[in-house]
Length: 84
Length: 518
Image 1 (cartoon, rainbow over the protein chains, first blue to last red):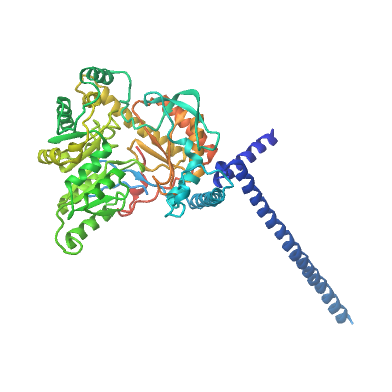
Image 2: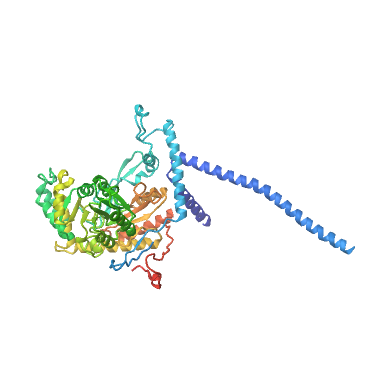
């Protein structure tokens, strides 16, 4: 039952989108054109976000690993030097 | 902004008028919607020009393609690309008397509103929230109809002449005396068409060398009459007395533009109820200004006669003022009296002058006798002279319906414009797709409403306009309110943020928080 009310809610949300962007008033071929343009726009945005974010995330993780490794490395070296 | 004005004791009752501001998100989304439709409009125009799509609207002939283009302006672009998509909400043919319930012919369109075909079915008993039937006199049975039928069998339907030639029947004289008595003025004159009353009589009253101060949102008939007269026209902000006073001061101090001579006449044009906003004119202040600056007042009571005031005598009675303060009282018989035509009331010299000098009196055919009889019977009914209290009951029923309907709509959370006491209720829709959706959804639920968009309103402020009637019973209003609530939830129309803005024109004190509706 929850699936049905979620489905109804999604349909209602889609109707609101149709009303706001006036695709409610368009003929079917105009709707196809409009939705395909929208979907391709959103898809391009998501892909570019994935591509940039993946590159930046990889670089950020590398930097973090370097910092932690350097931190762990230095105190143990200093402690070893102090003991000696 | 909610105003309760206590302006030097001019107002004997609170004046509650509110025009809630458009929420920013809604305005942005409305522009987005119009932007998308404009882009698709350009695409369709391109396809029509390159013959990819069949062109079904009016265009110039092949031989005239090199002339100055006729259909390139914004109005025509709007017409063929935006108006056509939602055209099925207008011009709906009705096939019964437009009372509280009406029958409508069903029509479908197979080519997206370019042509309509009738299915042959008649949709019965649609609750009529769109007709100007304020006192419920649009009836096909009852004393008005019987009297009109009798007069029709006596005089016939046509008069075949103008008022000045052979068209002045004794019925017209009777009507004019009755209207003068009803309004409390010395004399009145009736014309066959309300629009023509304004547009043909203002040129007879003012001319070149006179000044007309007209409200921003005046009706097309007043604007046309003002332009035809040749007088100088200056516009003041809607219902804004500071703007009007500034214009009056400038006019008196500076006089005519080049010669600095004093103006021959200054005429202030206002309406009783503005039909697109539902606002009532601030008549006590206008009259005070008129007396101070020695100008003349032309009051167009098209929607307010019969609909306001404890005994239905219009906005002058609503504010408790003297009818002799208004120089020219104009009104129409179309709205509250269930007939057609207009009248002008005022001093005897003024009306005698108009009888000889008005274009309408000289050239327009006189009113048809059954229509005159309908007006006479309905005015007598409102005044109570036919021996019953039907008229009084109807005026009170209309006031109750107005208060109830407006209160319930505000509680539901819609943005409603206008004064608390006006029977014209505009409900804001804003987005263009919602204009078409609202009209269609309400018709599916058997309620007929009038939706209004550009160019009758500013482009983002489209609305649905309800006209209440004394013929609506509480059950009908409850049904209508339930359906409006449903459609409002379905289309997300409940934009109101219910904020009470503090008053601007009196100092802050603790009574500011006691603004409750009674």
